Amino acid sequence: MQTVSRSVRLSARRTRPSALLTRLNHTQNSAAPPPNPDSGRTTSFGFKTVPEESKETLVKNVFDSVASSYDLMNDATSFGVHRLWKDSFVSGLRPGRRGPAKCIDVAGGTGDIALRILDHARETYADRETTVEVVDINGEMLKEGFRRFKKTMYHNTPQVSFHEANAQALTKFEDNTYDLYTIAFGIRNCTSIPDVLKEAHRVLKPGGTFACLEFSKVTNPLLSTLYDQYSFSMIPLMGTILAGDRDSYQYLVESIRKFPTQEDFSQMIRDAGFATGAPHEGGAWTDQWGGIACIHKGVKL
Ligand SMILES: C[S@@+](CC[C@H](N)C(=O)[O-])C[C@H]1O[C@@H](n2cnc3c(N)ncnc32)[C@H](O)[C@@H]1O
Image (cartoon, rainbow, N blue to C red; front, side, top):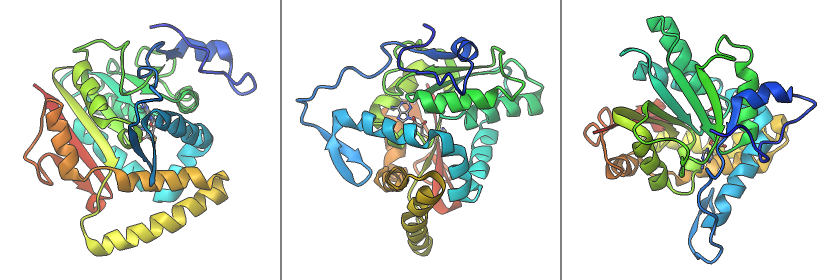
């Protein structure tokens, strides 16, 4: 895989370029095919309807803007609960249980899931050979992740690497390669969910696991009302106060409401060729906190 890129611009003030260059790989030609401005197709960007070809740029702008405050804001807006969901997501996957696993964490951002996978394998199975390739479309998020991993024992080891690439077109990642594909709070930002699932299926080995943690639909009407009130009023306000960026947090809240229901998303996973549990809660998916978030799993046959 080719090492870095013009698009991952390095901040000379904040990062020693030589160090970053060794670990932050850019997958050239990895983005989806060039947009066709005449396609006429539209998609949602939060509650707005936008031309399909402009969504990636809009999403990229959001994560460029939130990258430096992303971890702080996650803690603030969820009161730290995202950590519990991520812990439960990774421990349920038991990475390392069947020996060292080759993992890819897509839309991996600042590396929250990758770090948990490596910690779980090491702490539970004394496994220092499980690897995670962190993939994200946004170089700024990856740079935050890289900085964070520098403080860990995994830095400068083959256990972790960072790659700038689009979940919808993992062109430089080979077929039938990974034991575990994870995507956490990422898939709703992608323009085409079926394309993401198709690529996940392609890069997993037969028998490999697809696992997704994503915000979902709250089933209880009272909880749903309280959650709506909190998220539409407090999260953009916190975005303004803590990160100086209301619009990005408004988009993040709106994008949650546009994501398919648990039933519909689990059907999309099966349509991509994965086997799942029966299509109900506790089968194909497991709700977290009444469906505020949800874990979906599938196995490549
Ligand atoms: C809400 S963050 C989640 C980060 C991390 N997985 C976590 O749980 O903390 C969403 C991430 O998805 C990435 N993303 C959005 N669209 C993407 C795409 N098409 N391909 C790869 N990554 C994408 C963003 O750049 C961002 O880092």
